[in-house]
Image (cartoon, rainbow, N blue to C red; front, side):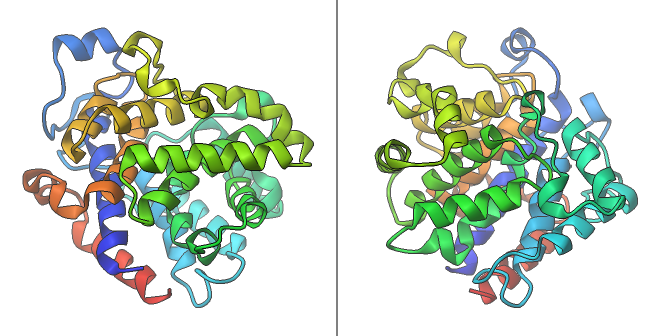
Length: 323
């Protein structure tokens, strides 16, 4: 995996996040009246232009763990990721402006449990109401792990890896399944498929795996993602696409934006202008759009103001070197 590919994914995610930060929590009607068309500042969190949020911070924490020796080939060191997450919350590690803000409830709870000594794989809250998008927003670095990179993808092994990493902050199988479907789409983008083709390949693979799975939790959660799996989602009207912080909504909104637009900029602006959880929808869509279209497709003026761009590029290079 090349440095350029990982850099495009990380910059794509961080730019999408930063586009959404100033307008987070504003509804769709507000966005229609005043749509985001470029990088803004201040607004919801009073941060300067180019500032990204917890979505990118925890993505980069996970990437740092994978960038350690053996991190992309063996079992990820969940304790290392847990320590980095604690350092982020308590000491503003891997933040854009040395300030931690916009922390999700399940993530905060998980980090407190980690600090109390709970094992990382058990720290993520696992009640049904704990299915926010906090694992999905940070999971993209796993697409560069050897398990997800394999030409002959072992979906059972990919599930186990995804479950372990997601469970550090989100322990419910619905969150893991959302992360799994997202990474499956990223897998086929990385194999060179255009977005529509990657989606069809991901959908076909997921349905085949789900139909033969013996995992009762997976089988129970499958219907929650039926709209994603049945192929009808891209054709649905915007009114049926929700952009809340619920993991299912974020995954659906991401795919809808990716498949209805054909450039990086159009994809992430569509995601942000859905309103509500704008930074996370922008980040999750931006990561995939970065993979699909490459770094050069991210408008130069957006990249120019992105906080800690050089550090992000350095992290991408270090992660690529471990492959």
